[in-house]
Picture (tube, rainbow, N blue to C red):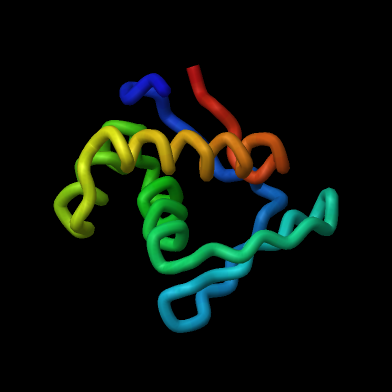
Length: 91
């Protein structure tokens, strides 16, 4: 994971937040993805145009976790989102 890399949200994705969780719908593929509280927070940071470094930094401040675990979990979540076409890597 490159912490300086920026990710963008596909213009075909809509997000509906319900309490601390959210549901994403990709209008192009009609796939749904449910996000828990932490996943929703990641989505919000990405929506604000944050880099991977800002996502990691923000989550380390807000949640009780270590950096290695966080980066591993983020890599899994963002890899899944990217594979589904919900986000794209920006050079």
